[in-house]
Length: 183
Ligand code: IMP
Ligand code: MG
Image 1: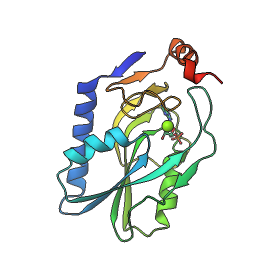
Image 2: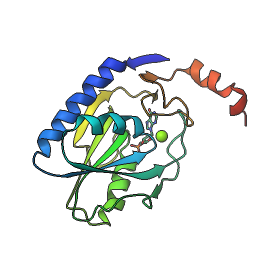
Image 3: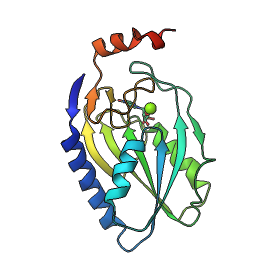
């Protein structure tokens, strides 16, 4: 795998995004909602860096896709979510790629009547957007490569890597050859 962002780079990007969020919500109470599962690592770091009173919740969005496959059907599960009505909500996700996931999740959350919804993502992929929306806070812009680590997965693996890496063809072949990943 080719490392794109090491631990220190990730930390400074996330810390500076936390600063921007703090200034934007100064004097307010925040409700932060993380999109499962990709946002878990970012959430853990981000919520400890933002010095504001906050409520923390999650929402689940899942679509089947691999490194080379396109987005599958998106399923959004808001059953675990905390009450967001009349709250200032910051939605947190790992990556803004085509933008369909984040905009669909925002649409779903609007049904619960928040006062405001803004969004923060770790990564935005260059030249991929297909929607008329862009996240309010972005820690890093990256080239159009499939990346894993710091919460991002390939077939639900590699989320635990403490760095961000681009998956190469050899990694995909090695992954497919792992005994538990046979069809
Ligand atoms: P979008 O709907 O195209 O914006 O895709 C967003 C979702 O696809 C993210 O929440 C990720 O779960 C997944 N995704 C997109 N690009 C990558 C990637 O490079 N690595 C891992 N997951 C990705
Ligand atoms: Mg994913």
